Length: 313
Image (cartoon, rainbow, N blue to C red):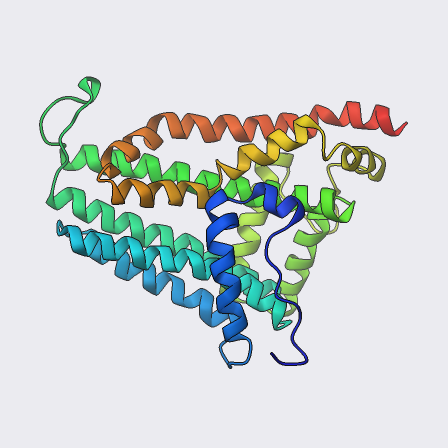
């Protein structure tokens, strides 16, 4: 290991509470082993990130077939992509190469990976229509319209999972690990960095951040006027409650509701031949679930402020 390299660190603290259990107990241990192998090499975190959509595209192509061996190979390739998704951030910290642009590339790689997977699933179900097992959706083989609508709804809820998880993860980690709600300042730094050095990935990352702020804080983000949702006294009181039942429940809720947890379930459903029923489930109940989770998070932060302020006073 290079003497200038930083420590190889996995997920811990509140980050561990929010992570998909498959990430915590399986992917990150494998990823950290790979990071130790990659530190002496010239391979960069951004190269690891950019390889992930390529692997997802290969997996999507293989999944479009009806050959069980090709489908299992697709799952293995996509799973390797998920492990690499744990590698890039840890490698960036170990090599001291973390940057806003790197974070943006990582986020875009994740989104593209899911898109390529869904393109493969759409091609598969169009070529091999699933049998409709639910009476309210009709009987016999599913039509192209039905498969497209189900996958579109399932893909939309997957995007909501990633969108909501990223927003609240940033806020909770700032509050519980740093003791300050610097999610606003973090977005402001991204905006100012983009002004100085505009990049395509940076523009997309900032747009997503601003959109999240608009949805959850009800204003379009301005780095010069927007302020933190929680005051220092409220953050202090909230930090003191981080091991309480409400906060722990919130961490558990995201660990089973985030985008990575969703992809883990999808991969398992493909292995066990239940991918269509799983997509129908997520297009209906799963959609309602993630909307309810995000509404509860807004309630958790906003209505809880009065209680936090009272404790602080």
